[in-house]
Length: 403
Ligand code: GDP
Ligand code: IMO
Ligand code: MG
Image 1 (cartoon, rainbow, N blue to C red):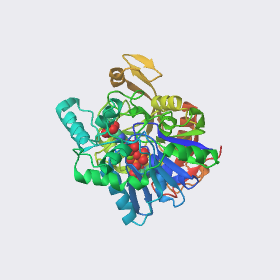
Image 2: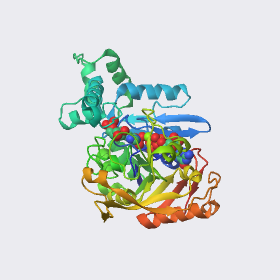
Image 3: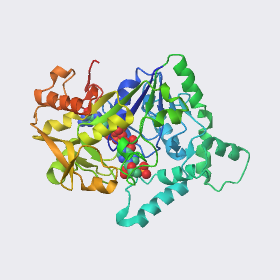
Image 4: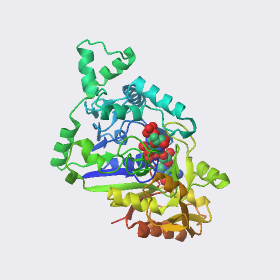
């Protein structure tokens, strides 16, 4: 023990990669537990930028074992390219990355289906990453998809498989990384080692708990980690929820605190809010306390890691939603019906901007009064304490708070 789960509390891109990187040096292993190459997790080491789609963020820490557990859908071409690129940049991956052979595969046909479906939906498209995620998970649930270990077995026994040669080749190159990730993590935890389960996407993109159908095709909440790792739900020791100091979303779907015009453009530019996987400009909006409280509840969040506080240095005033108004009535909870979420108008609490740079702050006392009041509000409103506050994309720009 312990197993710490790190998940996104909004619509993805909260800065999970950055937070996993910050705590990975204290961990013996990091495991990606759901989603697939729709994820784009960014970290900067000095001015070097790394974006990970399938490989866990722990790979940048030499002593950390990295695993992909069976809840992830793997595109072998993307994974292999990620491995090659990292090794070209001098990072050892071989022997440090283990993949569960029970991972379902994304095939070229899944990618085609994803693109065709988006195209045929026209105005009603979901805005997927077009990485084949939905079709791969559909085939998995329909029990007709390939699993990595099975496919490798069939290639080796010479069966005709109707998949491109380059695709089969990529699968074979991953063979030496196959391992029973569930058993390895189970043993590590029993030996007292420390493991991080790294989530993809965010709570509001969860297949059931998010803004369906504008969601991804897996469970993104913390409870998905023990399922995907084949561990008891009792094995989870703590859940860290990653929250941006404001909110972004890529793709379609309701977003109650979304802002438009010059303020949105400013937030996008100050926060560099462009998709790490697709390059799409992210939609931007104010902090939404209703969804933060919801995420705290459905994930059982023990502490927040709040990112991008520095982006709000440039705003005055700053707003945060504390409830919604729907058809003239106040709503304190997230509506269950997505059509109703479209009608939700935020009830805002207004904060004076602090208009000072927070990027040099390393202790909470270094922050301007206005920023501290904003953080106090988030803790009090959600009932969850802050464990980490990030004030810049560089590794050093971080405040750790004592329990
Ligand atoms: P993830 O998918 O949750 O890992 O997040 P992304 O990597 O897609 O997007 C987060 C972006 O914000 C990345 O470009 C990070 O480098 C950047 N970032 C993370 N934390 C901070 C922060 O505190 N301040 C600033 N300015 N940028 C940050
Ligand atoms: P990380 O891990 C933000 C969104 C897509 C789309 C919806 C469905 O970097 O936070 P999919 O391709 O999964 O079928 O798309 O989910 N989406 C993400 N948005 N961050 C992500 O990952 C996302 N992964 C998927 O934009 O709206
Ligand atoms: Mg991302």
